[in-house]
Image (tube, rainbow, N blue to C red; front, side, top):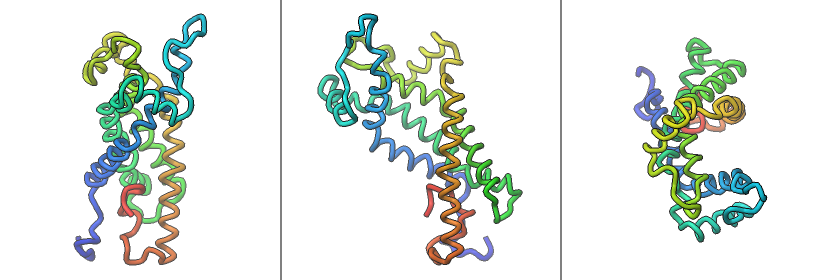
Length: 226
């Protein structure tokens, strides 16, 4: 590209897409036990029978939940559903973050100066698209995280089996359960996170505080490139 040094050439949409997904997968590998603890705490009441007697171990707090799961089911249970989790991140974060700049430029018709409205539209669009694409992986991930090994035979024997079982027993719509609230949640998260990041970075660049450290913000994917 004329006018750019080799190190200043902005990355393509494909590079942004893959970089965002890869970064999210690395983050998921580190934080997955915390996510498992969150799911166990959320569904804990479902394990109680009509007599309200606990059917399994009780979880108290994040650290207590992690320790209880590791002790009663083995440390590997903290990573139950990891494959689906990585599939989710590669499809979800790639669209949510990696395509944000491209969608923003679409709304501004290629203009370098994007208003807040265009940024908000881009954030909502990529957030909604990401959920629509990744919802089946999210459903399978949560199902794995919620089922305790100590509770008996596992319903799903593997990630592929989980997709097939849910589709067979609940129909294809079963793989998209919870899509509407998830779309609403992630549209808000995307706008709050990416648009705020985008505006702050633009302000820093205009003030010359990042001069020489990175190209114009419109050339980089927020949340992925500095």
